[in-house]
Length: 214
Image (cartoon, rainbow, N blue to C red; front, side, top):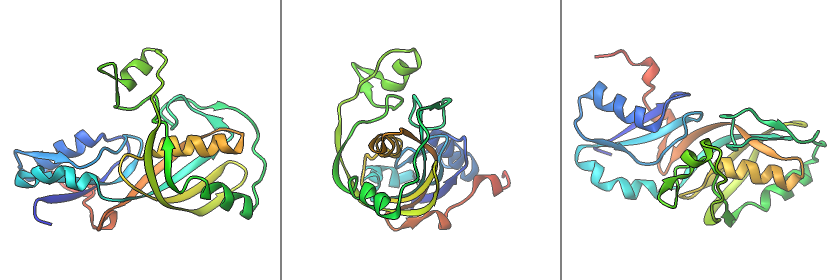
């Protein structure tokens, strides 16, 4: 679509850096992303430029697809690998039927508690700013939609790779945490890659690391 640039966000980049790169590389004066992706994640970011920035809200509502690595037996304050995880327990090996039954519990419209290290505001301040100062942050659950979730690979007892198709506002970090808690052994998001937003795929996207500066 005219006015939309697809970018495969490198590891460690913020979504803001992706927008800055698009503006600098292509020479656009006006640009904005249609959905944040955490710095530790990789994958598809939609960047609207010029007049298309008026339509950002409509792109934010598109369904998304992720590949998520859930690490069982550990917990992290940020629910991902930003902070050193703490060992909880040695997970047992889950059977195929047990794994399927567990995933089914998280498909559909579910109540999800956002991670403490998120950009949501608490009393006018960003939750992550409070959490980084050691303040206790408890965000209320929100209704989100998980359309489907399937196993890609299971490397027992710790690593579980999932493909997730979901709606707007889903925190995959929270999903990994809640799946781990449902097993009784804890869990966190070890790695994340976004591969699709609506009809757009990461396989169509530009890779900033492979683009020569103009």
